[in-house]
Image 1 (cartoon, rainbow, N blue to C red):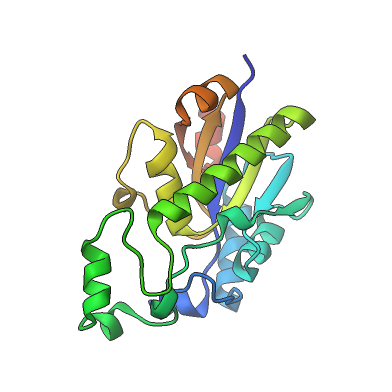
Image 2 (image 1 turned 45 degrees about the vertical axis):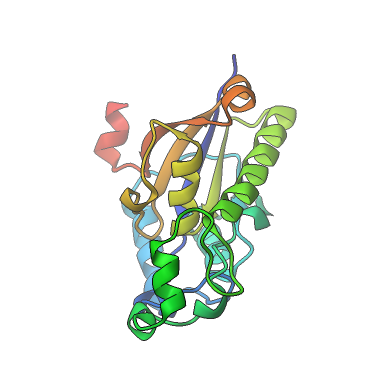
Length: 211
């Protein structure tokens, strides 16, 4: 049975990240420092030899994809856009700490959503559609390894929703330009809507040699 590898990567730093702002649909570019950090990582880490790159359409992700995988086709994947934070967009936790709707959202579960925003349950539904599309394309086109450049919240919740072994989304943290690799099979996906979590990516050169 064929297996298919997907490596998820978090985008580089933006001004909003540096300021601790909630940004989902707001389209911030990378900062100069964020770009430099990614270029530095491409020199010191071993990134997977992927055959295609899927990217959230937001600029911070497409710019990251071009830096990490300059010689690969980039396909837009709106299913992997960041959570829509609604009225919390552009605000920091300190600015919202007295907001009752914000406190209720923090305490809520999968179905809780910011005012005019999106719930984690809705996020998982669309990432499910994105994963299914990618797996079908990999099977149809005989692709064995692709990358998805997306957002930290998307990675954490996708792994928590569909990954085996099971992880709490709050335990999953990815640095800029880094992420998690998973393995999918058609049988496991069709029967359980699940994939196997392999571990962190990219590798340091010495770690790569040990595999």
